[in-house]
Amino acid sequence: MSDGSARPLRIALVIGEASGDHLGAGLVAAIRRERPDTEFFGLAGERLEELGVKSLFPIEDVSVMGFVAVVARLPTILRRIRETVAHVVAGAPDVLVIIDSPGFTHSVAKRVRKRLPDLPVLNYVSPSVWAWNPGRAPRMTRYVDHVLALLPFEPEVHEKLGGPPCTYVGHPLIERRAQIRPAEGERGDLAREPVVLILPGSRHSEIKRLMEPFGATVARIASHRPETRFILPAVSHLADEIRARTAAWPVAPEIVLGEADKLKAFRRAHAALAASGTVTLELALAGVPMVVAYRVDPLARRLRWLLRVPSIVLANLVLGENAVPEFIDEEGPPEVLAGNLLPLLADGPARRAQLRAFDRLDAIMVADDGRTPSERAAAIVLAHAAAGT
Image (spheres, helix red, strand yellow):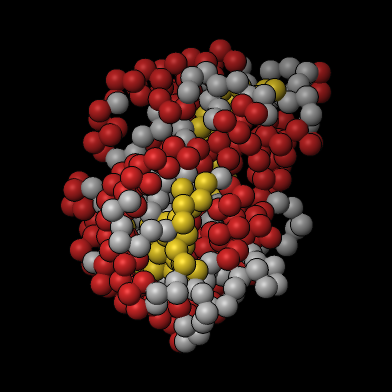
């Protein structure tokens, strides 16, 4: 390739769902602050498109989760993989950045590596090799040159497993701490009017499985603490379904939409009932004690024995202790969930123990170089892009 100073850098981005779109947008903004003339192309969601990155096709075509859903969409997914590979190769980038969604993005990266063996490939968001399929880490060295990790323990995991070079750049939630932590007086009186967040997930499959047991749990909590206020932040594409399902609840939550109202709810909340996922780390950073529940599909239930981690709660994994109680499938009927949540609505041992654990998160997750996670990720991408020019 020609000297990078003589032309703009070209960076190919491949994402597969909204989480990658969020990360990609932060990365693009950080890179443009250093190299304003950089050109981006590939796959983009709403936030990346707002930054002028045109998507080859709508990411909804490949944004599927679960074995059954993937099989049903397999012909479309395979066609989109081929189209994405051809698009990246034709675009002659200086670096390829694949972001999250490893089932899709890694399939693209493997094929691009065969056709452009000298192209640097960076993987932003490590696959969960620490939880599932550790043999994937050494296999990644064939088509990934560097992993940009969101979790502080992941570089050590990749080193032990023989994976690619891996750098902890930081989780993007770190950049939002001020938005999710309450100002003085914003989180009200726990004894007078406790506020409980209900977070059943952001995917249709999660809503389908969790809304009924969560509704029954809310009813039990309200029967013991009738002054409790329940708030359910909903993603817009599931709002109608959530409204329909909560209509059958004996106690109706307040449903809020939009990012601003969600952040406000986090700042006001005293406790939460949540599905397993990134939201557990968000709650922990916000200082909101929680109970976590999850329901898995039948195939995943059969494969639970393959799990290699002591917890499915991301906050627990980062903390290195099971501070947050979690209940999978039949382990967590409504009476158990309510029984574990009610003690969090009083200033007692259960609540204090979680808050003490959460107080350690900043020291674990915040780097001391003064840069944001997006800026650290951008520096690594730009270094690889420059080396490839």
